[in-house]
Image (cartoon, rainbow, N blue to C red; front, side, top):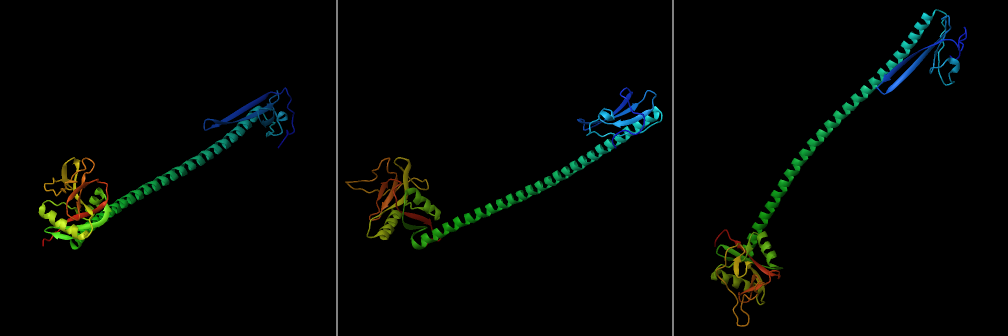
Length: 297
C-alpha cells in the first residue's frame, strides 16, 4: 500500500535509521535492499519504509515501499526491521539457489548432449573405417579381375596367333594389318601375350619372309620387326634386349641399308623380298607379332 498509517507524522527532523542488505550472485551481480526506520526523539517507531534510501514522502511514484505501524518501543521496531531484512534476504537467497539449480540442470543437459554427440561421432568413425575396408576389398577384386582380363586377353591373343598365323617350331607368327608406329606395335604385341617378331637366324628369317610375302601378295608393304638401335647407334638389339647376330639388310648399288644414321633407328621387313630397312620409329606401318607355342608340332 502507499502512504503512511495513522500516527505521529515523521518530521524532517526525526532521526532516521537505515539497514541495508546486499546479496551478490555470481560475483558480479549484486542486489542491495535498504530498510529505513523513522523514529521520533522519544524512540517510538513511526513507520518502516522500504525504498531506495529515502523517506516515503520523498520516494518517486515508481518506487515501492512498506509501512509498518509500531507504537511499541524502539527495540520492537528494530526487531521488525530485522525480520523484514531476514525475509528479503531469504527470498533473494531462494531466487539465487533456484537460478543456480537451473544453471546446473542446463550444464547437465549440455554434458549429456556432448556425450551423445561423442558417441555419434565415434559411430561415424567406425562406419567410415568399415567402408574404407570394403573399398579396399573392392579395389583388390577389381585389380584381380583386371589381371584376369589381361591374362585372358594374352591367352586369347596367343591362341589367335597360332590358329590364324604361321607356326614354326615352338613359335607362331601373325601379321596385323593395322598401322602403328614402332612403340605402338610393340605395345600391341605385348597386350596380346606376344612380342614383335625377332628372327634370330637364317631359318627363321626365311620362314618369316615367305609368310609375309604370301600375306601381302601381290603388293609390297613394309612391316615392323622387333629390332632397333635406339640405345646406341649401330648397336642393334631385339625388343627383349638381346643382341642381333644375324642381319638381312637390303643390298643394292643405289641404296644399301642401313642408311638413316641417327635419324632412322627402327627396323622393318619388306614384304616382297624379306630384306630389312631402317626407318623413322614414328612412321606407321603394319607389324608382326611372335607367340610361343606351348605344344610343338
